[in-house]
Image (tube, rainbow, N blue to C red; front, side, top):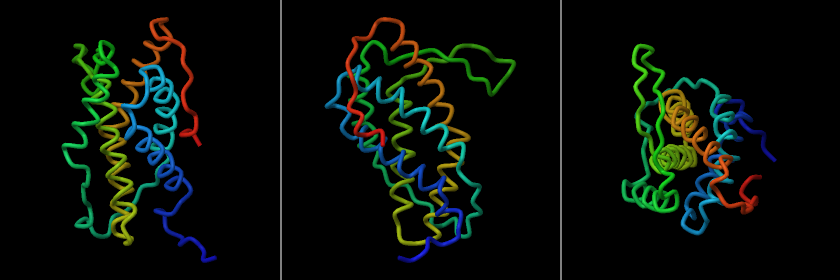
Length: 184
């Protein structure tokens, strides 16, 4: 058995992020087969994992920025968005405060469907780029998912998770168990 190269793209934190991202994408690709409560249960559990794994990713110096690619077609994003919107139904929209401007505390309308479809897009692009057989692709995959965590999907995840927590524990959801096969 050959040793894993001593490069940050092969670090334990990157490999664990790949596992959680793959789990998330696999589950979300079948979102239409789950009830609202099953979807809530899964997302309530996977969201903190995604956040922790995203926060532990190493800073990667990309040698060849031309190797950065995006893979997810807009139609796939839109299909997932529409499936989630149908499942979340009246619970899809929520309000949050964007803390990036301390002088502006006006509420902004968010969407669980949009948040989780955007996260899916970032995770899927990460997975597909990382699977390419080149170090340049892997460096770009890790650097890009880290950048997007800091600027995009980390925020979306936190806002959506807070809303899911409220909806799940406010007594409005029916109790059903989730298929935990996806959670390692």
